[in-house]
Length: 382
Image (cartoon, rainbow, N blue to C red; front, side, top):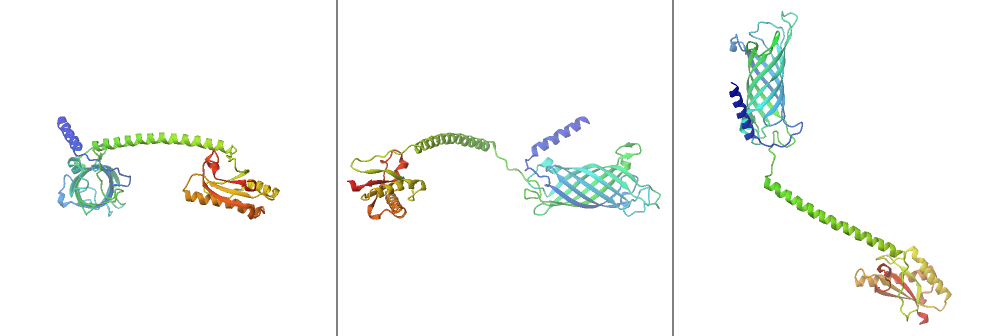
């Protein structure tokens, strides 16, 4: 007998391993179902079964953890007690039984889960429960409770386009386990029954009403993805090195620029020109005079007032960035902006001022940024 049980366990384990499928993970509210049933039952022994059938009705709520295993809570109400030695009870509902059941889908266990339920499946139900027999004061029977156990087999049909409805026929046997001083499975304290029920399976987070097979990748594809990840990681590390070098270069240039701004510009003056010392420096691409640059304009205005016969040439320049045409217009706009300031702000006669746009240059000053400038030449002394 022991060898037979071990052989059956080995066959069952092999069937489970062979038919195993990886399904998508389920959330807590996935794979729940709710059902109702009705049926007939009778005492197993010492009675004419078909003459002493008792009707019942019940409610079942359950959940599958996997395509094979699940659980259910079932409540049954019995409406007669034919063949019982304790009659009449004097109540409409003669007794109840509430069970906590385990469920095993043998079709999926041995045949494997195919991605949706089969049209026909065989499901085992088994578990323990608590039974209660009702009575009234007029009945010569005491109310009593019993520890119960139920074993059954559901022959189930999965219906609907989404296989969300399940209709089943269930032959079962229910034992009253406690017999005075001990608990045991005693066929004389049992009842045979047949239930007909319908379950509705609620919608899941995967978009279906049942388990969904997970899409697995083969090892070659996994190796290819890992190789691609490693190559991308190496390329990213190389780019991070380039970025780090660029940051260092930027930091060096910013330091050089800060140092250059602390230095006074060195003017390169042609010997045949009488260039005045003040200069007006502009921002890149701009022709408006910054507030700080008006000090140089004021110095030139003072010079013009102190030298009544002086005439000046204002030369506008641009740094080499940008097109030739743009830089020419920008240099002219800068020269005119300074002339307008001398005339309108400081009252210098416009006839004493000439302007000339010199375009782009990088020869006036050592620092390129300082070539965005306007210079002043006293042309009356030439």
